[in-house]
Amino acid sequence: MSTGAANSSDSKVETISRLAQWRIESFGPCSYRRSESFKLGIWNWYLTIEKNRFMYIRLFPEPCRVSKEQPPVARFVVRVASPGPNRRCFVSSVMDRLLRTSEDFVWPVDYIFQGRFTIDVEFLDLKIASLNGGDPYPLLCTEGLLKSVSSKTSLQCLSRMLQDGIHVDVTIKASNGFLKAHKAILASSSPVFESMFLHDLREKESSTIEIEDMSLEACSALLGFIYGAIKQEEFWKHRIALLGASDKYDIADLKDCCEESLLDDINTSNVLERLHEAWLYQLNKLKKGCLLYLFDFGKIYDVKDEINTFFQHIDRELMVEMFQEILTAWKPA
Image 1 (cartoon, helix red, strand yellow):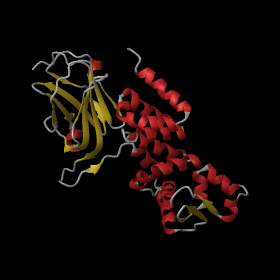
Image 2 (cartoon, rainbow, N blue to C red; image 1 turned 135 degrees about the vertical axis):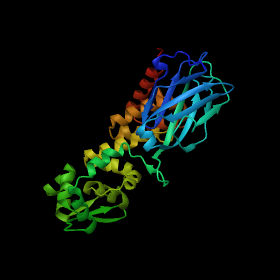
Image 3 (cartoon, rainbow, N blue to C red; image 1 turned 45 degrees about the vertical axis):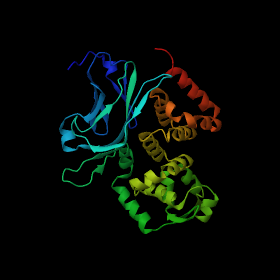
Image 4 (tube, helix red, strand yellow; image 1 turned 180 degrees about the vertical axis):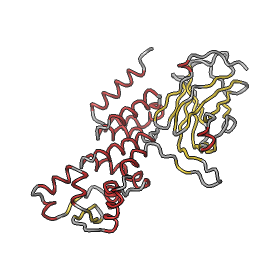
């Protein structure tokens, strides 16, 4: 089997969020090629292509102690596409399987690409297989920031104060209900809350904070974060509302957690919404990630039906920035 000579750039896999992309200038006379390893989750991965009657694509983790003791269970989609006006694109079905070796996923593509083409792997979910036969358990990546912020031992006491209503002295009025909390805890978490209770404002006089742009459940998640009692599923469900609250009440740690989480699962169905949120709340990291996803990774083709509506509602400065990205991405090498 001929491996052929490929330069390092032709073997490099670029990654962003949960998308990996291998750009190949030409398969040429090669019958087999393997990518450089790329990191996603706790594993290093490889892609290979093999040319026979079909083109066969494989995805597998690097054989090592981590993949042996904590093998991945991945739900993913693979796409192969050529650029330009005569663009050919092949998309696999949604795969959901345990990946240990190069034989666990082999996808035959009934076409041999001659020139430039890309192979995309979009991980829809990543879990760690249980070695005792139980259900796979979730892999927490960027959620580590959330965990580190809210897992201090002292917050366990604050959590109990909230849950048991110990010495509560302020009422929060949400759009559909009321919650009880503590002025001191709120003031220590947010300079905006602190200002409410420091000066002769109505919140100080009435001991009531009106947050009527958030539901009772979203407010509960906000208090859960402040008191260190938030659950991951609550954070995930209400992270857009929490992002707005973090900006409104100047809670920097919460804003960072929301940005990292939104950056972690960019896909074609949400990238334009995420870009708008990044612009609205000045999240430069998320904005850069969305623009990279659209232009450097070529996903602008997949949202062409939604882009006109998006342009009708976005800020002029954001539109200019997007066109600048287009010009940069399409500039000849």
